[in-house]
Image 1 (spheres, rainbow, N blue to C red):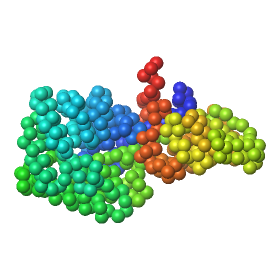
Image 2 (image 1 turned 90 degrees about the vertical axis):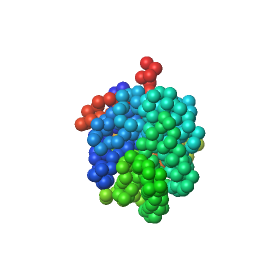
Image 3 (image 1 turned 45 degrees about the vertical axis):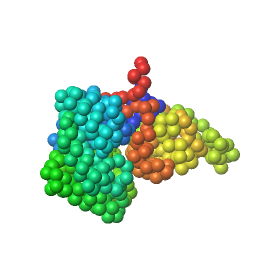
Length: 392
């Protein structure tokens, strides 16, 4: 893309749909998928991805972290349910009720205020109750106090219980003992809700991406697809021979300068790399100001003409340097692959995460608004988004 020669991320919409089908084929037939598109779709772009998959028949809806993220989806025309997974503040309850955004509840004050909001707008707020089965983050206890809370939810005017859920803390570990214990606790609690309170909650969900891959017994009415939606793996302990995933995002740039270094010359801030011999060095106009990890200094690499070019010295805010001594065909303006495939070589987010001391979730989310996103379908560009457009 000529307009984005400095840096651009390509988001493959076909890969998103491929990953959805792979996950659906691995879960219970009557389980639906809730696509987690928080943090702007883990940095990939929530709105284009949501629109691409909304009509898939097994998609229940979407999950986000904040009401603002939910309103962006609704404002873009998304029709299927949108659940806010975290706490929502009272200032937004009436707007959530009007837009039919599903809040997560776990406090009585939230419940009371949401009930008032539902009554004020003339339609009940459809709530999802969060149960803490071991994450110790948010959620009611799966005990008598929790049962009392569920009973109050059922009796509060202006709200309607649509869902109940929990979240696994260790489903991405090889040992599934903890996750299975959480699932057992959750199922026992929802059983008590049905048997003791006579309440049947329509949508029970607890499986995250790791659960979708390896815990079929946790496929309830819905599952929440997060990192796997984007073709990335929850951890290196999750089996990779159960489903196939296609990475959705690639990151590219171009060489802007090539110079010869003599032995003894230093590279970048602090002179942490010193040339031991004559070498050819290329400058790439990307840096930690774009979300590219500074911790890749002196240890990461990029691909040029299908060959590895190691990073030399410290990654700067807006630039970094690589060794192209063994790539004599490299010239200024050549394409550079920071994430993705070039010929027989590839750089995955998992690999970069390990090299940089981050993990793939963080790496994807940290690619910021300075990086334009280009969306493709069938190999053709169908949409692009850059923050600079907002001010032109």
